[in-house]
Amino acid sequence: MNDDDIAQARLANQRLTATTFTTAAEVVGWLVAVQAQEYAGAKAALGLRAHGLDDAAVERAFNAGEILRTHVLRPTWHFVTPADIRWLLALTAPRVHQTNGSMYRRLELDEATLRRCGDVITGALQGGRALTRNQLRDELERAGIATPGGPDRDGQRLAYIVMWAELEGLIASGPRLGKQFSYRLLDERAPAGEPFDRDAALAELARRYVASHGPATAADLANWSGLTLTDARRGIAAAQPALLHEEVDGQTLWFADAPLPPRSPSPTAYLLSIYDETTIGYKDRSAIVSADDGARLGTMGNALQNVIVLDGRIVGTWRRTLGKDTLGVELNPFRGLSERERAAVAAAGERLAEFFGLAGD
Image 1 (cartoon, rainbow, N blue to C red):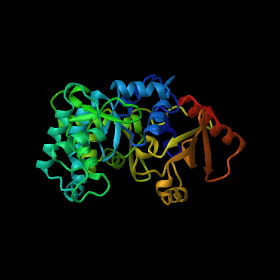
Image 2: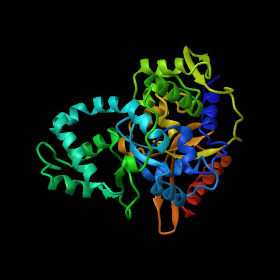
Image 3: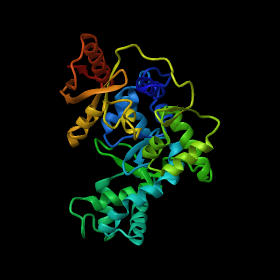
C-alpha cells in the first residue's frame, strides 16, 4: 500500500465512496463515535454516508434519541448510539476525567461538589424532563452552587459540571428545544447494558474502529479513542484474528477486510468539516495531506473549519455561507484545479446543499 491506497481505502471503509446505510443510527453505529461539537458539520457527515438522509431526518433521529450527543472518548462532544454509549463511557470516561483534572481543581470542583451537582441535576430531570444548560444552571444556583462563581470567568464552571455529569453516565442529550440543546437522564435515553468487561470493550473498540477507519495504526486508535497506546495495542491484540495487517514504511497498518477496496471514480470531491472522521480519526494524516499543506492548515487556528478532499487528499479549505434559501461555498484551494476537478468540487457543493434542503450558490 502507498499513501494513495491508504487514503482511498479509508474513504471506502468510512462509507463515503459507497454505502448501504439509510439512517443516522446506522452511520453512527458503524463509525462507533462521530465527533460532533460542530453540530451542522457533524450532521452533514452522517448525510454523506447514507442514502436519502437529509438534515431534517438527522434532526428527527437526534430528537427521538436514536443518536445521542455526549462527551466521550475525548473532552469533546460525539454522536453515539444508545446501544454503545454506556460501555464507551465506562471505557473512556476515566481518561477524560484525568485530562479534565486540572480544570476541576482550578474551578474548585472537588469530588463532593461534583457529586452534589450530580444530585441536583438528576433531581431536576426526573420524570422525563428535558432542560437546557441555562435551565440546569438555574437549578444549580437555586441549590446554592455558583455557576459561574469563584475562579470562573467565562462560564467554564457550568460547562465542566455538565461534562462531568455526562461522563458519569447521569445525563445525555435530549431533544432540541427550539434551537437550544437540552439534556435528559441517560437512564431514560439508553437501556442499561451488560456488566462492563474492560478487556472485551477494548477488543470491541479496536475491531470496530479498524473496520470503519482502517487502514490505521495502533497510534491512530489511541489518538482517536483518548486511550493509551498500551490499551490500543491490547485491544488490537484481543481482536485477533478478525484483523489483518501490513507493514508500510516501518508502520503496522491494521484493516478488517481487503486492504484495497473498490475505488471511486476520479476525480471525486468531498466538502468536509475539519472534524470529520476522515481527518480527526487519525494521528498520522500524512496519507491525506502533504507536509507543506499540513503545515499551512496548522497555521490557520480557529479559521480552519472545513477542508476540500479530492480523491482522498486534502487540497484546500472552504467556507460555508448561508442565505435565506441558498448555501454558498467559498473555496480556497492550495493548488490550481483542473476543469474536471472543479466540476467534482461543484458536485460536492450541490450534495451539501441538497442535504440542507437548500439551493447551491
